[in-house]
Length: 294
Image (cartoon, rainbow, N blue to C red):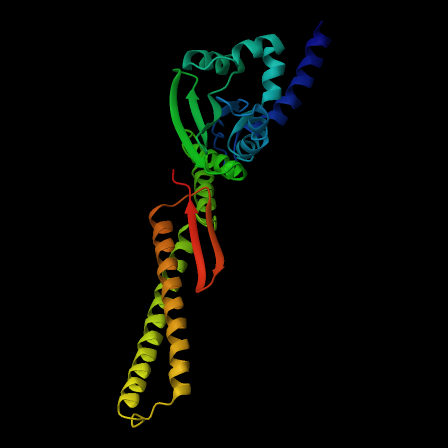
């Protein structure tokens, strides 16, 4: 009996020595507890095809799993912990108490649920973070997209927003998400808006200057015609001025359009989609711009 106790002690002691360092940081301080987040499958609402919602599961789940300071409970973990029938019964609920029961059964601190819906031609991705301890919604994030191909980007933006709102996260992780948002050079960032505004203003000034010069030359030609060719402006110069006037008008129009688009982008950031289309017309170029608002 004494031998058995001695062997048990010898086996237990090295194991404790191996496990003890994992609970502390390099400076000897205890490691902070990482929040446990259970990520539910995306739920399709209304007439939305569930297959499209299922396609967002790896997008949202992968974004959450990439956070080093979070412990993620995936749908596979949920199936294992609850069993198929229990999972089917519990995941069909939508009220906070029911969702909190799921989180409690999984030992999760928070539960992240997502719903994909469509209103008219606008797709809406809505994420909700539930605190399992008090069955209260801790945070929500919603993003919209005006076309199906932009739904994934809407899901990424909404997930990034709600990840920043999870309590107990490290400052480094939250700052990393903030830097990621700033580095996002899509149409929703401030960089394209400022660039378009500056470029549009420059094109407008250049176009106005060129048109003013051409108008002056044309005026001199008209005076020379009235004085029987005494103005010094030839017919070829007048034709060139007419062409320059058209170019000036076109440059001014493009400048106004670009400046307007840039202003809109600066005032309404984090767009899920923005489209700029150019098409030739008999008198120049036709430009159209469309975007989705939150």
